[in-house]
Image (cartoon, rainbow, N blue to C red):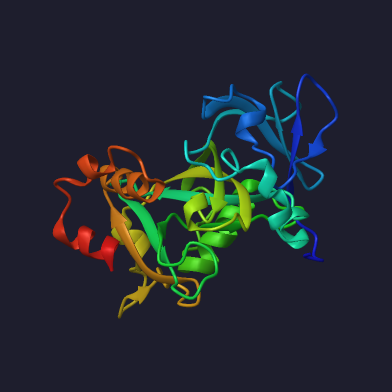
Length: 260
């Protein structure tokens, strides 16, 4: 069991006191019918707790919470609970943040996770990671963006809003193994006032000094793509039924990166 302080998910229904979500508790399922996989909730950070509620509360934001239909937690057989190590069962539900960085010329930054990472190796994702105690979502997003890519956004150079919440489990399907990680990921949209080339390079001195410097221990590659291409990649990673159709027409280089 981890000994450091973590920011965990707490759930509240009908104005009840927030309670720490259990590892095998479907967060989305707490707020929607069993056959449904998305619902609107209110969320916000309070004293190192990420609270999700069916009611609005002080400083909360109303957003869409979603999970895939094949979510391992949703479909986990209750009789297999004893097969999970206590260290996993006692984890609770962690909180993560993902940064959708979009340039003024509408390019979106994606990164490929390093092959040596324990969770989601070689997967194309937006920059992001965990939330540290006393951080706000934006603080955590900017820190993770800087740590993974070297990009340090200056105050006033972007706007930000919370897009929604995604219930993420690793491995992504029960056929790939028992659940080891359970997160609620907050997706932040950061709209930059600079083009992707301006973000890529600092033109203040000659020769150009690269501003985008991926951390090779966490990121093996990065790319700027049109939003529809990002949608296609995310759909494929999430196992969407129409992902094959969405991928038709993408540039060959994108296909090559996806299947490396």
